[in-house]
Image (cartoon, rainbow, N blue to C red; front, side, top):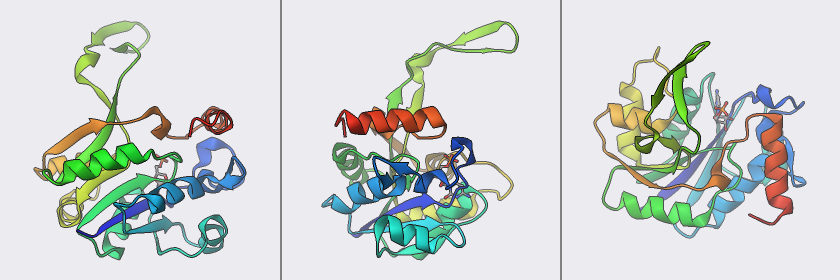
Amino acid sequence: PRTVAIVVAAGKGERIGSALPKQFASLGGRPMLAHSVAALRAHPGIDDVLVVIGEGQQDLLADAVGEIPSTIGGATRRESVIAGLRAVEADRVLIHDAARPFVPAAVIDRLLDALSTAPAAVPVLPVADTLARGDAVLGETVDRTALHRVQTPQAFHHAAILAAHEAWPDDAEATDDAQVARAAGHDVTLVAGNAMLDKVTYPADLAAAEARLAARLV
Ligand code: C5P
């Protein structure tokens, strides 16, 4: 089967507080986007990588990763994903956030294995902190044993996830693609994620990612 990775990088990334959108901000001397693209390109199970960028970001993309298939995204992450899905020809896709720079090959292995028997698979990690409801005072504590932190890349049969996105109501929010697949009736297999896949959102996350690189943890 032909497997294509779609990296969504069309967000504004404003919470990071840098001049450039965070996916192009420097991380270990390279644009953040370059790290995930390199890992995905290097994996033997992935045939091609396409990047979804914002209007006018072609030069930033070329500086970051050189020649690469790309398309223009939309105002929401979901619109950017749909643009990517429509721009690729593939049997299977991995949909990945550019804001998660480090992609361990072992996680890709687990996702692709899972896709041989399931229409969708996502990497997850356990929740470490206590979770509770409440406003000013503590409400009910939530049982975390049944909860997961859901990461990307998320893996799908291409036709299934494209149809699922086309069926999802335009005015409804979706924080990831697994949620959209599940709403369309597809079972989503859980595989073990990795802390390296944590998303870079705030300035402190960028510092943590720099530290991981410096410590050669990736
Ligand atoms: O903002 P957040 O970190 O949740 O975005 C997750 C990923 O989705 C980022 O890599 C971002 O560039 C991408 N995105 C996008 N198009 C948007 C919004 C976000 O490609 N309109």
